[in-house]
Image (cartoon, rainbow, N blue to C red; front, side):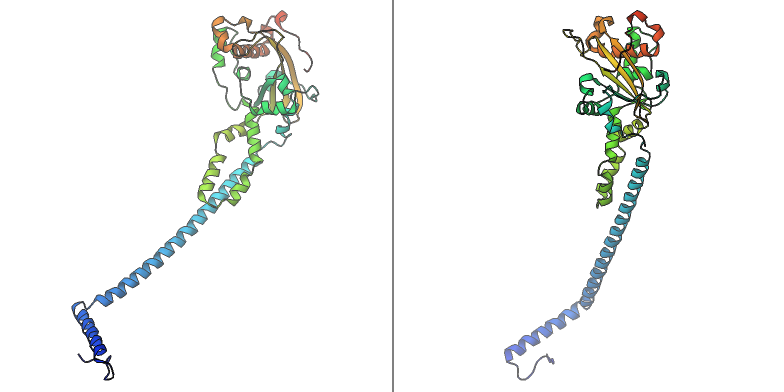
Length: 319
């Protein structure tokens, strides 16, 4: 087959190979006339697909970045709003070190019923623990709302044991009384690196994790606790030597009660009373001596005229 690809100077073998290749290519074109065009279309399609994929990835990335920045801005705005709502009074985390000390500065005196009209913070501990800065802070971190506090804000109807048993099983409203531990936890959160973590987070998963921290129940309880006006401290004095405790640790002993104004860190109310589980029936003493004693004490504090004056111990000075 004649072709311009051969010359007279070629060797016969090379000329035959070139002519064979030309014939094969011609045959291929005749049998599949659109194959070359199809390859061109395929290459064009692949190129367009690559461009489309790149554009999609770029748009997705920009959208992800935009959503991340919006999430970051919303988290920081929420954090700053909560931070702005924190109390402006004395720093509460320094207060536990002083609650058991005898030299708390006195302030304007209040009646107990006046104190109970405002949100209340509560801390209870042994005198040996609350008497030292480290022990008081540990007690504050582990504090919870017990029967003494709950029966003060939700008083029982009378001193019958059955009535007190029902009262100690009821949880008080969170806005009425909160543990000191919840308040400290919230304050420590706002002193943590949370804001820095939000500002430097690079992944949406990190921002989602931080958002869960900002909305967790413990923080919400702490924010409620921080709205308290007064701190009620119950200081359990040591029991008398040789006195046997009940199964739950209760024994005859004195309790010093103090109310501290959280706006001024001053002592505004104080009392000292004795508790003795001897009045509790045998069936209840095994498990409920301490809460029943505490709830009875709350009733007596709220209704002093209902208590036999001979059975009441006159208040003493600070421990």
